[in-house]
Image (cartoon, rainbow, N blue to C red; front, top):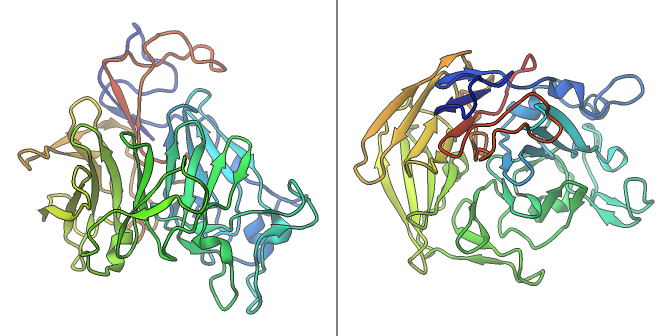
Length: 390
């Protein structure tokens, strides 16, 4: 789904893209069209004995990340628990409006659902999927643990692994990159087994992420083994509800913003001021007007207004928070109703509400004749498609 805010640069609305203020379906195919399948048409999750509903690649506690250089929304190694065993890399391209499979699952390295003992390192000793001896990540419920690194791809770490019972899958604690050519890594340990949410800090060129107890930074340019540091004051209470947050980076104010819920399901907004070293969590707002129990709602820092935009996991309404006055306005989009994603009562959007920085030219994007993009005066908000029919 896509909601366009502003005016198109050209005289006509591009094909497949909605008019200003409207939600619309923009995909020309579906994720089902590109999922890896064996010769009989079965996905890897069917083969391994998990929950075989294809929707689980989107809805089972998973987010994703928009990569502005690639103009793709990337969802990598998603599934986890018993919901999905596919550790491939998939993407939606906003130039072609097509889903694609970038890298397929490492089928032979993935344990069956019935296995209840042993260690599964996901190392391809035979060189079936790439160089002999290369390691791969396992599928996981990613929560908010994916964000884009400029010039690289998607940073992926943490979460709940596929088949969590009794067996040992060592790569869940490592940091990985999902790139246009496949998987890179493993790199440093992320500092926590648990789920996390993360943002790209464009000022210090690092990933900043929060786990159950700490705010940490990952510096991709540092030597491997010395890239992860805790950057908060260590005074946050241990709190499993941290995994129910979405994050964004506010470059104007140099802060990390998290929107989620507290233990009572009350919507809250937290900020970490990165000018301070070490930083500390500040609860900016308790009791925001969007619905209670909005787990990890869609969240962006609008690059035009500097305000925070929240999509509470369903419907046409966006909530716009002014961080200076703590006042909230609403935007009610028209057009196609995005609906409420299945599992919305328990799952969230996490990184699934990016802004798309428009092209300054009205010429058609490469590989997409007949379409044009908005002018530099506008911006686009995208909610990850969550239904098989999209």
